[in-house]
Amino acid sequence: MTKTDLTLFRERLLALRARLRGDITQMEDNALNKDHDKTTSMPNHMAELGSGNFDQDLTLSLVGAENDALDQIEAAIERIEDGSYGQCDECGGKIPTARLEAIPYAALCVRCASQVEEDGP
Ligand SMILES: [Zn+2]
Image (cartoon, rainbow, N blue to C red; front, side, top):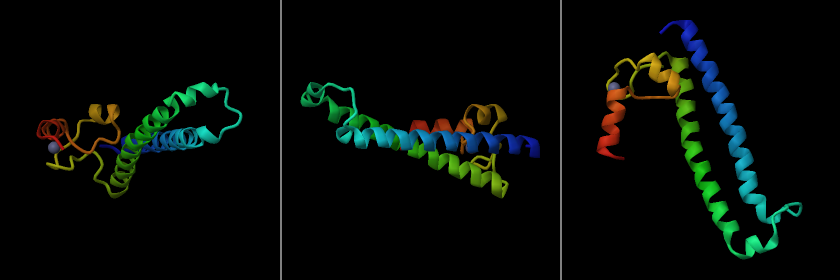
């Protein structure tokens, strides 16, 4: 992988991280402050039906998934810094550039990633 490629992927990862961080902050605010928000246009009877709690659980679990992505993005940025970016974490093989373009924070090559999926967590 060339230095230009690395710079490009680094920029994409940094942009992705910034966007995710922004989204997470906004989502957490929405979920946690919903009940205290006096300016909300949501009718009161919606909360009485219990749908408010459901929304909150759903939003917070989405935040959990995005935090995982954030961890992976952080790790990918570290790999760019230490020069191991584009190398499979599992077998040390080369991760195809096309895969990195689709998932810039991919840590595994296609083969290892599909093995992990087969084996389960
Ligand atoms: Zn691999």
